Image (cartoon, rainbow, N blue to C red; front, side):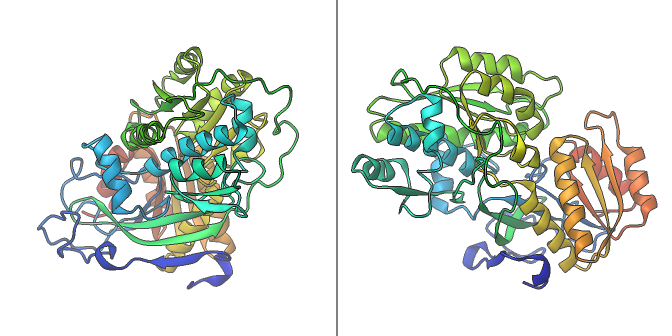
Length: 438
């Protein structure tokens, strides 16, 4: 790595072949527009997982040319993309689709290992089915056959190897680095692998207690994913990932010999907070696991209701560090890494691009604050400075005051930690002359 003192444990995985980053205005597989854009930005601009999306229908060509972004997840192969598209042919993005798929498969395998579809029984085996000393396998059918034969397994997820630490989070993960093209779609540039240093051994309130009853024999997945709100663009790939997992589980004979079921609920984005009522719908349907939510803030608003009901919660996209120490009764897991890793990769990326004095413009919620704090921490530790870290109200009618504060700070790069309000903030940034592009 170019800055090895700040990227301990990270390994750059360069892309080759058809996935190599295409130069601005050149031919590529992503359908880039024919326009030739000036990639020189007013200010270097960076997105994160919450706002890395296809904006081809939202902005004029060349608006985002050269913008870089990070989000968790390994490079997806064509096979998995094709399988997701068979489930939902209208998918534009695949963000967190793999993590959603992996969460369901892991829970189903844990139920097989426990011989019990009760939530506590499943949770007690989640680490065992992803332990690195087991026999590596992928897919439900292959892994379930090994479990039934008495073999210890290590499920290799589509989103990457998953080795849960003592608090239910991945102990290592991959962060993708992407760059936007002339048509406001994005392509992969490289992938960074690293250990996640948060979490570790469980603390008080993070272990399973009490009796573990026998389940009813039917593995029911309740998804609590965004169908409406600022994160609605993440819903389709996540829901498709759950649908695909349940489909493949049932094609392989189901869990414990019985077909599985998927019950869907809308997490929204917290404004208004519809998630608690939607959780009731899932609990009443007998969900053994709740797959969701995507938003860390939404998950924090319902985690007590879910775990107090004795139900396992698995998020495919929560990255807030708040979950590392949350008293979740041992019933919370996530297949996305904490913000510590993405914060480290983003800080390294910005520094490698030559920025020395950055602005961070972030949502004022558990996700935005945690990621902003980690970017600031790693960037300043590397010798850079943060000119301003501005937290904004996501439901504000406009973001003019926030953008003006960023402009006045005199930074040489801006990191936008945002959701769908990106569509409102980017025009404000451009109007103020601080990028991304005219």
